[in-house]
Length: 591
Ligand code: B12
Ligand code: SF4
Image (cartoon, rainbow, N blue to C red; front, side):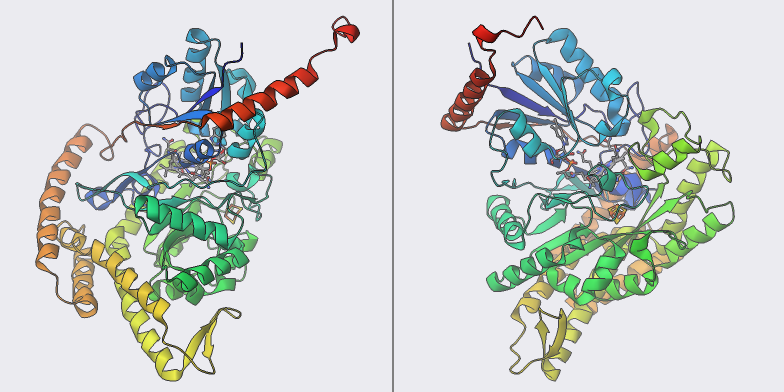
């Protein structure tokens, strides 16, 4: 008898960022900022954890009944299995492979009838077949792959889920309701930088999920009406690499008067091509740029004055998150420190430091393997904040890999102060400059020309209503960070940081007016919760931890598919399996 397929899509089990039999502590929290950007900033580090977005995208696009289990504890996972599934899909990244292994072994032992499907970045592991029991592996984009696997229509357009971004959000110990949303326009990147796993995993090709500006705009509108969000974190390695799509998106936002806001990743050469004015108009609140190194060998940074680029973007209110890689081939004991100082001197509001990590499947991995320089580092430690996984002639001592990285974070913090103040400063300056520029353009009769992506003298320039809305939106975002400035001032790490917090508060008064009573009360609240958080932090440090580790709660989401869609798929599967049944008159079994 046919039993309809039921799929459980699961993330690996927690706790996360805690060293145990299955995974590491440092570098493996379910957080971006505290993990690898505002690391070492103590209570100033904003805390946000992110859902496993890919799983929701897949579930949204299957006719097969699917349940997504995000951030399960071990008991949540084992209990869920008892509900009866035909298939379980485990999503994992390389450092979590031992967790995926434990989950798969458990399924084989207790539920041998369930088929196991593996997906995500962990599938680049070369010896996966012997390491994690499974029935199938998806090496690429999962929604279309699973449609094919379950005999569904692979070519049906992809539906984008309406997803709220962080699982939790805390600032100075105060928990607030996450309000951002997530956009997943595509996977991979064509630039093919030698170390880049996100490019190599998709064979240095871009795999669009939302292939036009119109489809992205539609996804934004759907999300806005479903979860009331207008700001999006964009999961796309190089969003602006498709300039036509971004231009079409801007044009639709202008037509409909919808100044959505985006945090996104893009390489320097694409940003240069489009220009800071375009980014600002598009609504880029934060852009992540891989600056990598002063002597970056990668084509994306060739001939670009990165400092000027960062300055120009931030002057206009676009927060830059610059990402630098430590222990590249050319680094030695002296120039690595010069390079760190260079990355900090770019003045970006935020800076990520990551150790050069050869993930299997990348050109870097191939090269180091050829040269016999790969070290036998367990997969669980391949997360970029640990000992190098290859022999670096200038850094033979593993302790240095961890120490120099940590010092880089410390230096950034001590020189530029808390990232939260830097972001507030960039936004407030952007609002100030934005109004000045807007008025100057109106005086001089300049209007936005979408063809040249510049402001130019037009025949009959109209008031720039869209940009006014955009600036009001930016002012609202800046206001959101305002109360944090008091706590940043009270708990500042040094006098320069305290001065910066004070100057930022003054700038806020100039740009946005005096703080309201509500602002003051919130600020006072954050000083109090920040104080409590500081005590908790010190306690954790006494216990030998670098910071407080928070755990996201488990979330279970059911995607019940309508009976007609399932029945149709079932009939198709039945028909095709009948077609492939061996003809009894021509039995080939004995051959
Ligand atoms: C968001 C994110 C996070 C979030 C975590 C989200 C979560 N709940 O897991 C945060 C910020 C917390 C995080 C932390 C870390 N991350 Co991270 N992260 C990302 C990021 C930027 C986006 C992931 C995403 O949502 N993409 C969009 C979705 C649509 O794509 P997707 O996840 O790849 O899923 C698609 C396919 O892979 C496939 N698929 C995925 N799962 C499954 C499962 C099945 C069954 C099937 C069939 C298919 C399938 O189908 C999906 C839909 O098309 C990626 C980089 C990137 N651009 O992908 C890095 C990335 C995944 N992270 C990475 C790493 C290493 C880490 C950290 C160790 C820290 C670090 N060094 O960056 C920690 C570890 C945390 C932990 N304990 O697990 C690496 C993984 C490398 C590798 N080879 O394993 C990546 C690729 C970044 C990089 N370039 O190094 N990360
Ligand atoms: S530009 Fe960025 S995403 Fe693209 S290949 Fe290079 S490092 Fe990877």
